[in-house]
Length: 388
Figure (tube, helix red, strand yellow):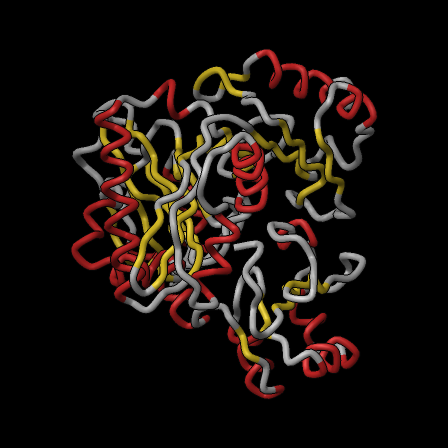
């Protein structure tokens, strides 16, 4: 893929250069970014960037397509490579997603779609005496649209504030979450490497549902063969549904292992390039340098979007990244000690609560088990906690 010439150059337009760094920049591929202050729509609205796109007859690629980006691209006659924003919305929206899944909605935890005012505390009477449940709004970002209802007062407050809002409510399930980045073309499906999703740990975030990283080594030590088979069954079924719906390129799934019943449940579909794509691709490049054949996830994404043939994805079984988000106690971070320990650091100029502050990456895993760091992970945690 990297050596194949592309008839029309691709301009990846993004606020964050890291999202686009899965291919080397050359005459066929260019990253259009700024200082991080402008989002993708603002960059595409810039007259200088628009002239550069037209001058080079370039195709445009973005991290996540939106109706607004699509409208601007149509107005300016840009060739936008991303799948339809309307389809992405239908798949990601927690309310419409269940209908889109159809018979595959059985992969979801037991759930209901209803108005907030119609929710009763015993909506899952067979669950347990605590009767906790999860409430999700149609849209969420880094876990902020997911609410754990633990007691009647939690529910009553939401019913008072948002009585007419539609929501998806699901049984509360305990267990680790696993994710995979999957590439779809009209005639091929590539199921990506499975990673453990690091979620909600302090001091990295204040939100217990916020994704803060990935560990590609842990799944192979804590999941059995039958559990991995169940994960792949869900991944393949969703990918086939995406393919039939006309999706091309990357998407991601999150699957939770319900430890009490030993079940695997689909909990998230990200109809876009997942945030872990670029580091997964870097780890794959390292494997390729040691003779492992195949494509990186990012290469396969671009190939699918430009109608190039897909081969296979490079397998990896180690490596991790973790994000320190902006929290009540951590609003800035001195990263010198982390760098001295050999971790690769990417810093962000963000101040909004739960936004990315520092990304910490390592070619070795940092998790020992679910919600438990290994020695490397403990070093990262201790360095950050010293500054809290």
